[in-house]
Amino acid sequence: MLKIDPTARISPMADIEESVRGTLIEIGPRVMIDSFVKIKPAGGSGDVVIGPDTAINSGTVIYTGNGVTIGQGVAIAANCTLAPTNHAIADRDRFIKDQGFQASKGGIVIEDDCWLGSGVVVLDGAVIRRGAVIAAGSVVRGEVPAYAIFAGAPARRIGERGG
Image (cartoon, rainbow, N blue to C red; front, side, top):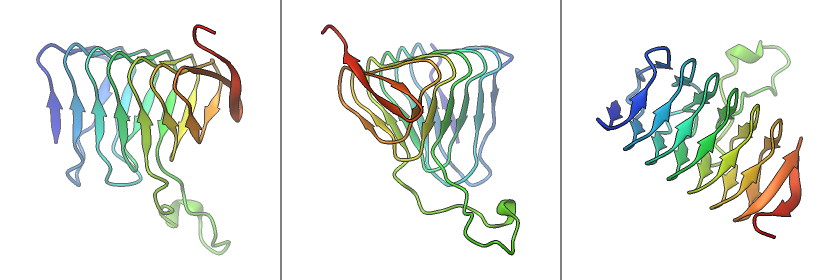
C-alpha cells in the first residue's frame, strides 16, 4: 500500500516501489522527496512511515525491511542509506542471496527534528532520538540519545546540540 499526503512534494525522478506483500509506505504532509530517492520493499514486512515536514535529499535509499519510522521535521542529506534488515550468512554451503534474512532487530526509528548528514548509513535496530545530529559518513547501529551529536563508523558521541 502506498499512501501519499496531497501536500507532499515528490520528484518525478524519485522511485517509490509498491510492495507485493502489502507493506505500507506512508508519506506525510509537506514531506519533500528529492530526485533519485529510492524506497524499496525488501528484506521484511515492516512499514515505512515518513512524518510531516521531513526532507529526504537526492540519492537516498530506504529499504522497508523490518520497518522505518521517521518523525516530524527530519532532514536527511544526500546519499544516505536506511537498511533495517540483515542478510543471513551462517550457511557456508549456500550463497548469501539464497539464505534470506536474519531475525529483526526492531527496524529503524528516527524521532522528530533530527539531521542526518550526507552518506550516513542507518542499520536495523537503530533508534535516533529527538533532535540528534549524525555527521556525514557515519554508520549508526544502536541508540543515539536525544540532542546528541554522533560521528564515525561506528558512530559515537562527539558532542551535544546547544552545548
